[in-house]
Image (cartoon, rainbow, N blue to C red; front, side, top):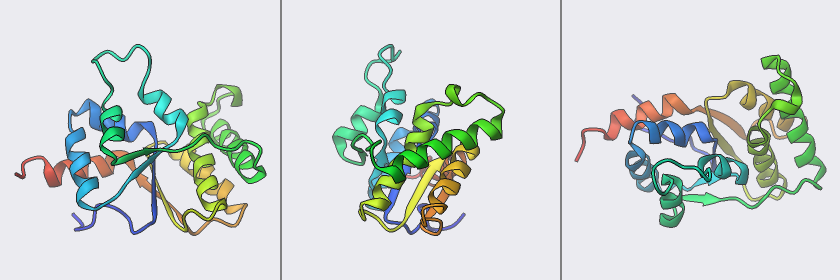
Amino acid sequence: MSAQLFPSVESHIIDANLFIRFERHDTVRLLERAVTEDDIVLLLPTRVYEELTPESYPHGTPPVEDALEAGWVQLLEEVDYSNPVVSATMDIVRQYISAATDRPEHTIEQADAEVGGAAATLLEQGQTESIAIYTNDLPAFRGIERALSQHGYEEPVQLVKAFDFSKSVENRYQFSG
Protein backbone atom coordinates (compact mmCIF):
# COMPACT_ATOMS: atom_id res chain seq x y z
CA MET A 1 0.00 0.00 0.00
CA SER A 2 1.18 3.47 -0.82
CA ALA A 3 2.25 5.67 2.08
CA GLN A 4 -0.09 8.40 0.84
CA LEU A 5 -3.84 7.81 1.16
CA PHE A 6 -4.99 11.08 -0.36
CA PRO A 7 -4.06 12.41 -3.79
CA SER A 8 -2.09 15.66 -3.93
CA VAL A 9 -4.97 17.98 -4.79
CA GLU A 10 -6.39 21.10 -3.19
CA SER A 11 -10.01 19.96 -2.85
CA HIS A 12 -11.67 16.65 -1.96
CA ILE A 13 -15.35 16.26 -2.94
CA ILE A 14 -17.21 13.21 -1.68
CA ASP A 15 -20.20 11.36 -3.03
CA ALA A 16 -22.62 9.61 -0.67
CA ASN A 17 -21.26 6.14 -1.40
CA LEU A 18 -17.95 6.96 0.34
CA PHE A 19 -19.58 7.92 3.61
CA ILE A 20 -22.16 5.12 3.39
CA ARG A 21 -19.37 2.57 2.98
CA PHE A 22 -17.68 3.74 6.17
CA GLU A 23 -21.03 3.84 8.00
CA ARG A 24 -21.90 0.29 7.00
CA HIS A 25 -18.51 -0.97 8.16
CA ASP A 26 -18.78 1.05 11.39
CA THR A 27 -15.45 2.68 10.57
CA VAL A 28 -16.33 6.36 10.26
CA ARG A 29 -13.85 7.01 13.10
CA LEU A 30 -11.09 5.60 10.87
CA LEU A 31 -12.04 7.98 8.08
CA GLU A 32 -11.96 10.84 10.57
CA ARG A 33 -8.51 9.79 11.74
CA ALA A 34 -7.15 9.60 8.19
CA VAL A 35 -8.65 12.95 7.22
CA THR A 36 -7.49 14.79 10.33
CA GLU A 37 -3.98 13.30 10.27
CA ASP A 38 -3.53 14.55 6.70
CA ASP A 39 -5.18 17.90 7.51
CA ILE A 40 -7.82 17.40 4.81
CA VAL A 41 -11.39 18.64 4.74
CA LEU A 42 -13.89 16.60 2.76
CA LEU A 43 -16.33 18.73 0.78
CA LEU A 44 -19.95 17.68 0.74
CA PRO A 45 -22.39 18.92 -1.92
CA THR A 46 -25.82 19.85 -0.55
CA ARG A 47 -27.77 17.09 -2.30
CA VAL A 48 -25.23 14.49 -1.17
CA TYR A 49 -25.76 15.76 2.39
CA GLU A 50 -29.50 15.27 1.90
CA GLU A 51 -28.89 11.66 0.84
CA LEU A 52 -26.84 11.07 3.99
CA THR A 53 -29.42 12.64 6.33
CA PRO A 54 -32.83 11.21 5.45
CA GLU A 55 -35.68 12.16 7.75
CA SER A 56 -36.16 8.48 8.57
CA TYR A 57 -32.52 7.80 9.55
CA PRO A 58 -32.75 4.53 11.54
CA HIS A 59 -30.04 5.02 14.18
CA GLY A 60 -30.31 8.43 15.83
CA THR A 61 -28.03 11.10 14.40
CA PRO A 62 -26.39 10.41 11.03
CA PRO A 63 -22.57 10.24 11.43
CA VAL A 64 -22.11 12.95 8.81
CA GLU A 65 -23.64 15.42 11.30
CA ASP A 66 -20.84 14.67 13.79
CA ALA A 67 -18.27 15.02 11.00
CA LEU A 68 -19.65 18.43 10.06
CA GLU A 69 -19.65 19.55 13.68
CA ALA A 70 -16.05 18.35 14.14
CA GLY A 71 -15.02 20.23 10.99
CA TRP A 72 -13.44 17.45 8.95
CA VAL A 73 -16.38 17.55 6.54
CA GLN A 74 -17.62 20.87 5.17
CA LEU A 75 -21.03 21.40 3.59
CA LEU A 76 -20.78 23.28 0.32
CA GLU A 77 -23.23 25.99 -0.64
CA GLU A 78 -25.97 25.16 -3.13
CA VAL A 79 -24.64 25.18 -6.66
CA ASP A 80 -25.53 28.21 -8.75
CA TYR A 81 -27.74 26.88 -11.52
CA SER A 82 -27.63 30.27 -13.23
CA ASN A 83 -23.90 29.82 -13.90
CA PRO A 84 -23.78 28.40 -17.44
CA VAL A 85 -20.70 26.25 -16.77
CA VAL A 86 -22.31 24.74 -13.68
CA SER A 87 -25.68 24.08 -15.30
CA ALA A 88 -24.06 22.68 -18.47
CA THR A 89 -21.84 20.44 -16.36
CA MET A 90 -24.82 19.07 -14.47
CA ASP A 91 -26.77 18.51 -17.70
CA ILE A 92 -23.86 16.66 -19.30
CA VAL A 93 -23.39 14.50 -16.20
CA ARG A 94 -27.07 13.47 -16.22
CA GLN A 95 -26.97 12.80 -19.98
CA TYR A 96 -23.78 10.74 -19.68
CA ILE A 97 -25.13 8.65 -16.78
CA SER A 98 -28.38 8.12 -18.67
CA ALA A 99 -26.55 6.87 -21.77
CA ALA A 100 -24.04 4.77 -19.82
CA THR A 101 -26.66 3.06 -17.66
CA ASP A 102 -29.51 2.95 -20.18
CA ARG A 103 -31.84 4.80 -17.79
CA PRO A 104 -34.11 7.73 -18.60
CA GLU A 105 -32.41 11.03 -17.77
CA HIS A 106 -35.21 12.12 -15.44
CA THR A 107 -34.49 9.11 -13.18
CA ILE A 108 -30.85 10.08 -12.54
CA GLU A 109 -30.24 11.19 -8.96
CA GLN A 110 -29.74 14.93 -8.62
CA ALA A 111 -26.86 14.34 -6.19
CA ASP A 112 -24.80 12.68 -8.93
CA ALA A 113 -25.08 15.74 -11.13
CA GLU A 114 -24.50 18.08 -8.19
CA VAL A 115 -21.11 16.52 -7.46
CA GLY A 116 -20.13 17.69 -10.94
CA GLY A 117 -21.78 21.05 -10.36
CA ALA A 118 -19.86 21.50 -7.12
CA ALA A 119 -16.57 20.70 -8.87
CA ALA A 120 -17.41 23.15 -11.65
CA THR A 121 -18.29 25.82 -9.09
CA LEU A 122 -15.00 25.48 -7.22
CA LEU A 123 -12.96 25.55 -10.44
CA GLU A 124 -15.00 28.31 -12.07
CA GLN A 125 -14.74 30.58 -9.03
CA GLY A 126 -11.00 29.97 -8.70
CA GLN A 127 -11.42 28.43 -5.24
CA THR A 128 -9.28 25.47 -6.25
CA GLU A 129 -6.95 24.36 -9.00
CA SER A 130 -7.27 20.62 -8.47
CA ILE A 131 -9.99 18.27 -7.24
CA ALA A 132 -10.31 14.64 -6.24
CA ILE A 133 -13.80 13.18 -6.46
CA TYR A 134 -14.42 10.23 -4.15
CA THR A 135 -17.08 7.99 -5.65
CA ASN A 136 -17.71 4.46 -6.74
CA ASP A 137 -20.15 5.63 -9.39
CA LEU A 138 -17.97 5.39 -12.50
CA PRO A 139 -20.62 6.63 -14.96
CA ALA A 140 -21.11 9.71 -12.78
CA PHE A 141 -17.38 10.36 -12.58
CA ARG A 142 -16.89 9.86 -16.32
CA GLY A 143 -19.76 12.27 -16.95
CA ILE A 144 -18.17 14.83 -14.60
CA GLU A 145 -14.81 14.35 -16.27
CA ARG A 146 -16.29 14.78 -19.75
CA ALA A 147 -18.35 17.83 -18.76
CA LEU A 148 -15.45 19.60 -17.05
CA SER A 149 -13.08 18.86 -19.93
CA GLN A 150 -15.51 20.64 -22.27
CA HIS A 151 -14.99 23.72 -20.11
CA GLY A 152 -11.19 23.42 -20.02
CA TYR A 153 -10.92 21.64 -16.66
CA GLU A 154 -9.76 18.20 -17.75
CA GLU A 155 -6.40 18.01 -15.98
CA PRO A 156 -7.29 19.15 -12.46
CA VAL A 157 -9.92 16.46 -11.76
CA GLN A 158 -9.19 12.92 -10.66
CA LEU A 159 -11.16 9.93 -9.48
CA VAL A 160 -10.65 8.23 -6.15
CA LYS A 161 -12.58 4.98 -6.14
CA ALA A 162 -14.50 5.19 -2.88
CA PHE A 163 -14.47 1.50 -1.98
CA ASP A 164 -10.75 1.06 -2.74
CA PHE A 165 -10.04 4.17 -0.69
CA SER A 166 -12.12 2.92 2.24
CA LYS A 167 -10.28 -0.42 2.18
CA SER A 168 -6.95 1.41 2.27
CA VAL A 169 -8.06 3.52 5.23
CA GLU A 170 -9.44 0.51 7.07
CA ASN A 171 -6.29 -1.53 6.40
CA ARG A 172 -4.06 1.28 7.62
CA TYR A 173 -5.96 2.16 10.81
CA GLN A 174 -8.14 -0.83 11.76
CA PHE A 175 -5.74 -2.39 14.24
CA SER A 176 -3.43 0.49 15.02
CA GLY A 177 -3.53 2.28 18.34
